[in-house]
Length: 188
Image 1 (cartoon, rainbow, N blue to C red):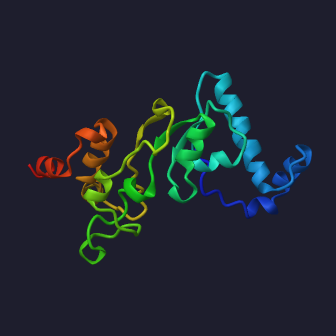
Image 2 (cartoon, rainbow, N blue to C red):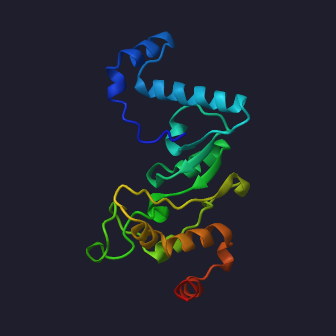
Image 3 (cartoon, helix red, strand yellow):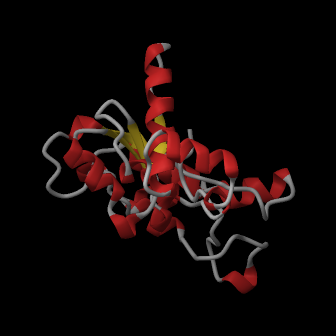
C-alpha cells in the first residue's frame, strides 16, 4: 500500500480530511494516516489479502499480520518490526537502492544521489543481530526508482551487477558468501 513519505501538509487544511478527523475523533494528521492504514489493513484482510507497507506503517497500529518493507535504517524499521512480530522484507537505502550511484558520481549517468558500490550491496546481512525468529525475515528487495532513469539501457546499467548482489544476499547463507568469488562470477 505504500504508506511512506506521505505529505500531510494538505491534509491539515483539506475540509474532507478535517471532517474525517472530527468524525473519528482523531487528534492530528498522523492519526488520520494511521486510521486510513488500519482501515485498509482490515479491508484487505477481509478479502483474503495481506497488507504490505513501507516501515512508516509502524508509526501506527497495524497488526502483527502486516508485512513491513524496511527501508529507513535510521529508524531501524526492520528491527522494530521484528520485535513486534511482523514479517519483514529488508530493503535499506544503505545497501539496496539501485538508483544510487555505483561508482564515483562524476563518472556515472545521473542517479538520485548517494553512492552504493557492488561490494557494499554484497556486504548486506538481512537478518539483524539479535533476531530471535529469523523466519520473520521474508527476504530482501533491491529498489530502482526511475525518476532519473529515462531509458531501459540506463536502468540496466543502474541495476547490474548490484541486483545480482542483492539476489545472492537473499539466497546465500552468510557463512557461504565470498565477495571475491561473487565478483569473479559477476565479471564472467
